[in-house]
Length: 332
View 1 (cartoon, rainbow, N blue to C red):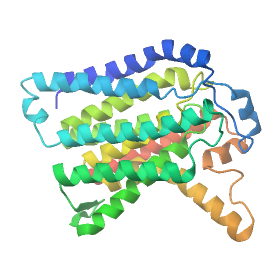
View 2: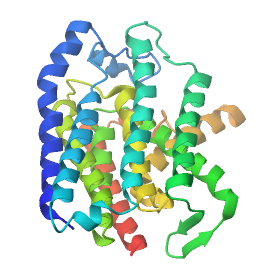
View 3: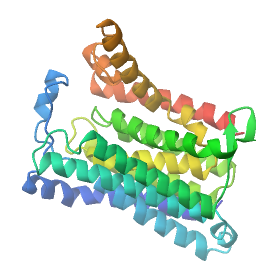
View 4: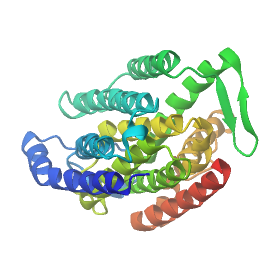
């Protein structure tokens, strides 16, 4: 593992992402690209009305440019020549392409909300169709450039599941992206949880000597940290669907790049809980007319219980860290 390339990626991602905020936030203010707070959320969130959104552009640019810089450092170092030539290059380039594809869907959703003044953004079928297209494109590319039908099961090993691999991976990709999107509901939450998850991926990829996934994870961790300079409570900017869907794509790309998609159950434990809380709430209301949680997803439940946004971020990040420890043990 090339430590210099890793350091270049991590530091440059943080610097680029945080410095872009100096220009982007005033620019978004001038365009009046402010977040509309829906009435269905906690009442005190109304004070956030008008906070600029689409701030995810910061870490999108930061992660892409920093990973390119890190990869060039890796490639031009004697130690890294062999690593840079590995077939893992598909998972790096293809992973970023997938994440950017989801980011574009999120951008269109945000654009419709803030510019066209249609609060719900893209229609549900439009968003689902676009996500399906990106996911299918990624799996098709994987079939041609890095074909596999092996499914890794934590603590059990890898098994060839044949054609079942593709619908299962489609479910994991779209499910994970939407789960990360659900997690973005409290100042600093999605960025903090994803930063910890990225650090977990950094450790796993280093242990398993996946150099290019190590760089991708570092670019994501640094980008999230740079964004938190502006997004930590009280947030001066929101990432919007532009950012949250890109983060979802990056998390998926890292899991696939390690050839361990199911490891998201551990690394993304918070994403899983957020999604399950939403499903349980909707199911309970439809079946019994009663709510299980005060509000879903579950971070809003804790808000309604009196937890501060800072406490929610801290606890959820700590839970993610525990999940990452389990992921490392599973990967070993």
